[in-house]
Image 1 (cartoon, rainbow, N blue to C red):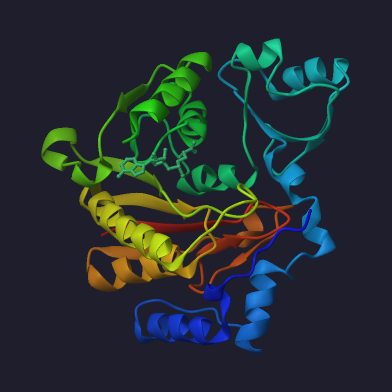
Image 2 (cartoon, rainbow, N blue to C red):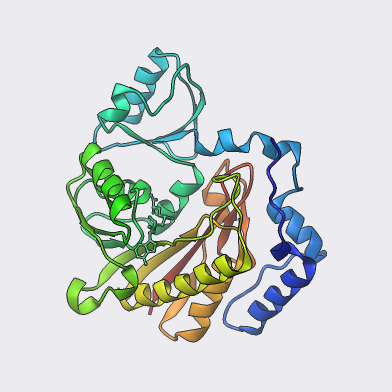
Length: 322
Ligand SMILES: C[S@@+](CC[C@H](N)C(=O)[O-])C[C@H]1O[C@@H](n2cnc3c(N)ncnc32)[C@H](O)[C@@H]1O
């Protein structure tokens, strides 16, 4: 099955307009390719229907993140290997790629015991970039089903506080169920719209993760149809959310912004918007070399990262409140 990653947005004219718009903002450095816009486009998204991409869906989701609150990675590895699951190491000592398995890895007793979470390796990067530390107050603004909330919790070793906010009532159930399954004790779940969160009610945070609602990607949803109005709707919502996020950060506090959409309007443009509009934020540069084994590169804004096929597409940026 070929995966279509091209779209009208990737028209060269459109790319030029977007770059010009971002280029006008002199606060952030752009990492533009030396060659043409078209080759940048290809280098980001790959060729449409290329053979390389055909196996991508398998590669994306067959990763497990070991819940180190419950079991040591080597112990879980041994248990799964005894059941003929073939695992491969990743750049994280607590995450493995599932090369093959005689059964669904979501249907094992170990999964039910909360020993691991299944997610793409790309979706672990925002939490690594956030670098949560014990005893910090952390806000996860768009939390369900909890892949990143539970990842933050294991790094805090149940010593900290995580406020996990989710607007969708049904999805908050899956968040709560994952938090409980994984034996996490320091998460407060809140069912509300994060745009309306106020520091007067919640206090200020050391770190915030804004894993924003987005139009997604063709790897996650091969039938994904994105149109211009969906992308702009998401982009506007993302800009509102990131404003709220900055308001909720302590001075010196840090925010990681991520999406699993490759669209510039939902990625670079949101960061460009906030950095240029507000005087109380600055970009913290992320280093692609910190994520060995992933197909990752600087995005149009240098120091913000784009993860590319065959990994699940993701955009990650980090900001600091001054
Ligand atoms: C990309 S998903 C988050 C995935 C999650 N961070 C994880 O790692 O499992 C975005 C989530 O944000 C929720 N959401 C959308 N708009 C929101 C808002 N205004 N406030 C809070 N949550 C929102 C969606 O319902 C969805 O569950």
